Image (cartoon, rainbow, N blue to C red; front, side, top):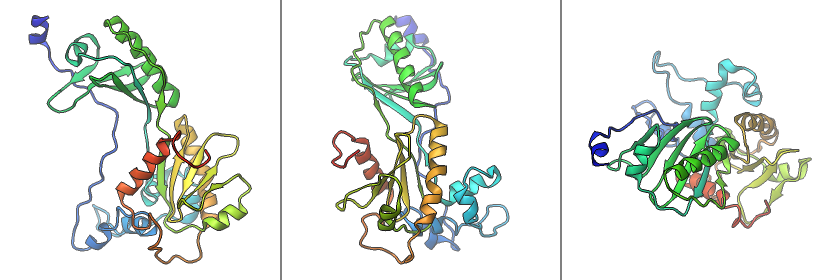
Length: 295
């Protein structure tokens, strides 16, 4: 074993993309607009379009409303639309606790396509191809799997459980926990949620104690958490195509219920919210069992 450790060489491989903070280089012409990029609502979406093109220096032009409503119809303008509404996709993630205590150093020798750099990360990274997924294994027995589908993350964990058994561990997996938020975006205007509740043909769930409503997608388990600022969480998808279909479904509805008054709403909790506010609500949605609203 000592000989193996001396000859051990770290195996580096490209990992799945992780969300990172979006850093913007300021300049004198658009400094004020960039200070508002992190805010939710109309100010955020408009501010993001005050930047200039890096090659020509010309101002970026927002896409037409008809293109945004039919977001996936014209692929040539899709990048501009995604930028315009600040569309961010979430990878499908599954988390389990195996009730084991792992020796990550030794496990890194046994598992193929593994990287363990304790001076940089507290987890062992493992990349697998059938199904394509990336796993993070922690010493306390926790494992997080990220993949391209809801089912793919579950299968990836089950198959890795068999690898752990071959390595001499006895993982006891009792419950799979999945991420509930699949995408977020923000339309560049405020919404009239009261009008949406009264006019919707679907069973919109709302509670006056919360600054949002849940809008379902018919014949699916997909829901949308919609805020009056125009910010939307897409919840409950299991495949990438389902996420896109959900966004295509809700976009015309959002444009139909555009608020007549577009003045700043300082009294709303998220009207000046930053990335911390978004993550706070995402965390609340993730705790489905504890969330007090009907789900």
